[in-house]
Amino acid sequence: MCQTVRRLPCWGRHSRGIESRGLRLAGEGPLRDIASSVSTKPQDSGLAGTRSVPPAYDTVSAVRSPLGAATAAGADSEQLARDAQLPGWAFNAHGKMLPSRYSMRLYELAEHALSDPDFGLSLVEHHRVGDLDLFDYLFSTAATLREGLKVAGRYLHLITTCNRRQVEEETDRETTYSYRHAEPGGRGEELCLQFNVAVLYARARASTGKNITPVRVAFAQRPPRSHKRLIEVLGTRNVDFGAPATTFTFGSRDLDLPMRGADPVLARILNRYAASLPLPPPVTWIEYFRQVLAQELEGGRPSLTAIANRMALSPRTLQRHLAERGTTWRGELDAARRRVAAQARRSGSLGAANLTRQLGYSDPRAASRYLRHLDQS
Image 1 (cartoon, rainbow, N blue to C red):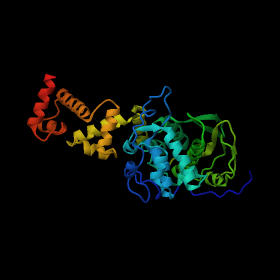
Image 2: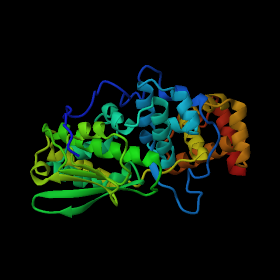
Image 3: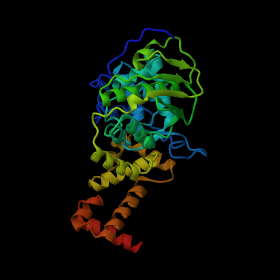
Image 4: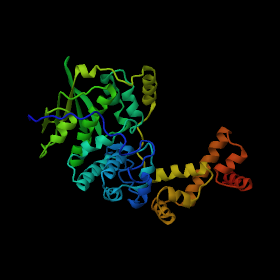
């Protein structure tokens, strides 16, 4: 594979793609703006472990990432979301996880929509430090690149249960790592693994300030028609295909490079915090509805219309989804109020005015009547 290598600058064009906190698509409004035009079906099957074998999961940011990059490149975000059958409410499910099939499908759809067989590599240009929240800073505050890779591998489950990264072989001169998918197969997996390897080296360059390139890389996929772009992005011509697993090798000198953002005190704090976190939970439609209802109650505005708007549904559609789950708006509101009242009574932390507001009443007398009704029932 003797091809001339053109080494690209480290990282990508950080100004493009998704804004890390505003969650906006380049040239468009917030992601939630497209939620109303994508699937509003409940799709609980497979979203909350209802299958006999739980599927692999990714954080919602893993779904936003290919969608945002494809939109920035000119694809129709609404059409992509519809074709991927993304549930519209999922765009606002911050800190939650969705089955990996959504992100894998988006890779495939984006490749087709853009006629870009290197979409996984193009995505690297849109990825920015901070897009993956805590996970990114666990890596960047480590003392060395080797330690950064170690801690990132330890907490990979915070962003995905689909990818597994492990050390395959280690010598004094080099260390070989592998990526494996929990649900292998499909073009989406191939594009995702290309992104995973390429973005890891981009992060290594940005974090050390050195033009780090792989000693060698091997992909499990079949050879593509052309892998010129892959060689350019990775900065090495030592790229093979048809391997038992996707592997990549770092030289020991590179692994021992200090990280520019190394901060031992902050790193210890972040590691302790990460160690205390459970696996981000999958989210079902009814769980998300109850989260939104609780937030509206806390703000004193628990109206059917307001909640339907937040979930990108009409009030009638919201009521239909509730009925499909054997419940009603009134029943859910009453249950939420009971939880607020019970918590307030246990803690004694809410005064009459605050409790009235959090129960969703404007008149303290109405709240008092409701509490008396609870006592009697």
